[in-house]
Length: 423
Image: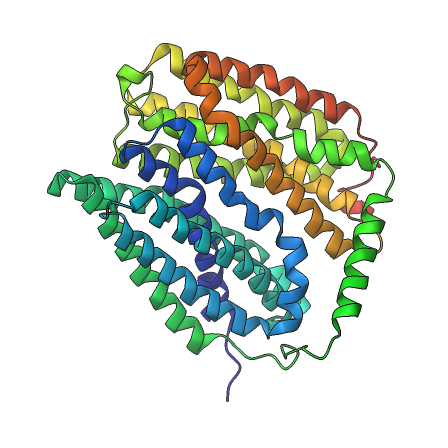
């Protein structure tokens, strides 16, 4: 049997990884807004869906030992497809809120588990040269999944609503379509994914060994230099974005008499789901190039300013209330470009902090704090916005940017870290 080319499965695997995440974190916001929920309830319920990614580092060892990673991938894809179908089925019912939240929770846990298995399988299924070569390909197709979800799927629901004049029916049909797509991905990956010899069951490992190693990992993580500063940076660097992320999406689609811009689903799909994601991607690419040339320490403060100052775009939009989609899209592009550029410093610091023994496990714990940094502000963002209104809320976000500057000023970073010559 000939060896399968990575081109046959790496792009589709990371496209499949991106779809459930964007569905849980973004598409759910727009759906609940269209179904008449308050911003307080939307942000509270959907922010809790970050929890599976928060606990992912503590769940990942069990994924490693219980079954092979290929089994986890195809099983989770089947569950995600079922969860998408479950959301579609429950939307028209009288218990739509409880039903959709239940299936979004199933999707979130399945997606987080799929992430663990897919990233591990990527290292097993490819040699070192292929891993380096395809790292950009996997990121690109993850971004394509994000554009497809926020752009095309949201626009599809909006277009069906125009035709049917029934919001619930339109969102239900869109989720049935997404479920069908994911079942197709499951069938394809069940057939196409290679079966590396290293990807075997590890059930023989004793539970005592597992918990002993987990305890050692956690202990060494909290014994690192600058641990308090590091954790504060992980939690507060993105605090303004944690407040802004969910409310900004709701602001874009909320009715004008509520202080929103009143974008249709198609307009939202273009402005945020396409133009915004392109800005985010370009900012991330430029940030990576800049850091690789001069190091994280040299670019830390430009990146701090990039991730904070463009938030003023939403202050402008909430006061100017433009109706021109080009103006709105340009503002979103600027804010997302700045976020992509500034987020590079955050990701590089997680790598910097994770250096040394158990670096893979320590990085996984860092990503738990990363998810927590978005979850905690998101829990209260909607209630705060409804209390003060969109305009005052976006000003509060700008004031919260001071926390980003404070935690960044406390960092001690090796000037050579991140430079290409440092290797």
